[in-house]
Length: 93
Image (cartoon, rainbow, N blue to C red; front, side):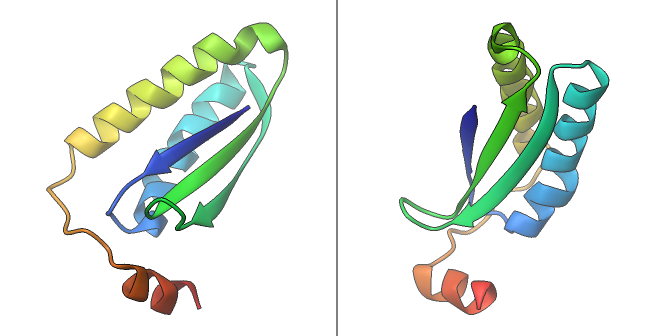
């Protein structure tokens, strides 16, 4: 299963605080056994999450957890200025 997390916030913050937390919860609940991410720019700065479900029926619960965690995470953050492609490339180098 895949999911994209678009944000102008620093991706390291998203990885450290959001991805780590939701990954731990989903593993504890037995819904996933693997999660990894890729940093991307196409369409704007974002993470592409790749998740291996323990069974296909877990997908709705995994998507719901990802959505709930992402909403709570971003609501708790102050507004961020948009990252430019130039700035992204300098940080990704």
